[in-house]
Image 1 (spheres, each protein chain N blue to C red):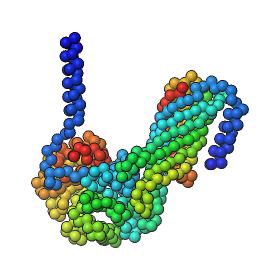
Image 2: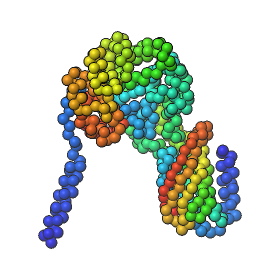
Image 3: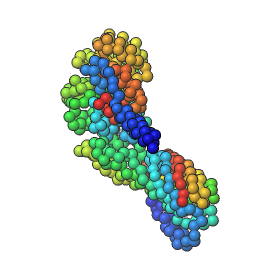
Amino acid sequence: MPFKLFMSQKLILISFLIVTLSCSKEEFDIQNLNGNKISALGHSGMGNRSAYPRNSYESLTKSLNLGADGIEIDLQLTKDNVLIAFHDEDLSESTNIKGLVRSLTWSEIQNAYYTNPLYTSYSIISMDQLLSNTDDMHQYNYTLDCKYHPLSNDDTQYETDYINALSQLITKFNLINNAYIESQSEDFLRLLQLENNEFNLFINPYSFEYGLETANKLGLFGISMSTDNISEDQIEAAHDNNLFIAIWGVQTNGDNTRAVNKNPDFIQTDCISHLVNLLD
Amino acid sequence: MKLYLAILLLFTYSFCIAQSDSLSTKKNSIYLEILGIGGYGSLNYERGLFEVNKIKIGARLGLSTYHLTDFTTSFNPDIIIPIAIHAQYGNKHNAEVGLGQVISNIVETNEVTFNPERTTNIHANFTIGYRYQKPKGGFVFRINYSPVIEFYKDYRHWAGLSVGYAF
């Protein structure tokens, strides 16, 4: 009998320890340029694994409502110079209409809908619509991933139109402190800098070394890299150069934890709920 | 398509009355379908209506969703209801064809107010595939090509795989 009592007490203690340990939150020693805080951003809203289409109003808004510090948005320019939230170069890849975004006007695109998932008809939205309908807009960060798709190499007007539209958008909604502009193109970033040297510009480079060199040369705000292609030491090196780091390609809960341990300033994740809870 | 479905239902009903002899195969089955006419997946109940020789006719009703909460994070689930009539030919290994409708009630954004708004639509579907089910019941396996005519407008290639239990 005493042995049974001892065993049952032991079992209760073990169970208590398991429950306590599994409920305890992981602690992180975050040291970065962002006030030692990592901003959790929803990748195109709720990310690639959500049933909501990327960049749809539903996806972007749900991410913010789940506690994200901001959202990453893929930005494209229509034929009549309207900035829309859309990822693919050709609309036929994910909607019921065909054509390049740059070859169609906003009124032609406005009535299109995403074809997945089945039985839904989520719309494409313009940045103007998104920002006009986001409550407390200025409490969030917006990483604007500039998808650069001119109709041809001769489309020199495209760059100018894109920069003008972006500049007007930021001015109209007073987003100079909330918008972070990403591009793979050094030339495009240089032109944006000439347009307004207060823009927070990130280069999205093919390698960390190139990114560090270019960001230092142009005096950019930071570097945006895939989590697979940047180490904790490289992030520390960027911070030593006063460059912020945004990391993307974070697709799972495990990726979230690994990303946080690298001490970046921003994480663009497909699992926003988990990251928000992790950083809470 | 709606006309075809009406004819099929009428045909099924007439046959039910004419052939109301006892069913030798287990009448009920429950299965989980991955993809299929429920979208990304659905839980389904199927009831055998009648059977003659190796031909069996059954009706299916399912339930599926994409989200339980809307984009404001309020509980406001999408509802997808696949309904179909299936005909099978075989004993344990069956060829299966089906025809049906899907009722979708999806929460989307109102284009003016940007608030959540429910939209109800009807879509047509048909299926052709293989079904494993012993007459005495037990394990059910289905695999099929199940295209959907979304909004009665857009033809969409689709497929489904089901596992379940007949009783």
